[in-house]
Length: 67
Ligand SMILES: [Zn+2]
Image (cartoon, rainbow, N blue to C red; front, side, top):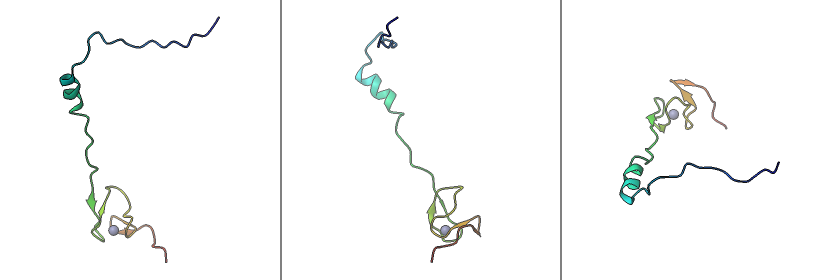
């Protein structure tokens, strides 16, 4: 039997108006990623991650700086 390259989609019954489309997309905006300050050096860092500036996490040195 031949394989047909036809895909079936749900066909919209009504055209979505500009206003309805824009109202739906009003909630699609991305929000800024949250940041915290490093307790050791005070840099703005991502939460629950080792500080890339000084290499500490929860006040302990995890990664030593390269010489
Ligand atoms: Zn730091």
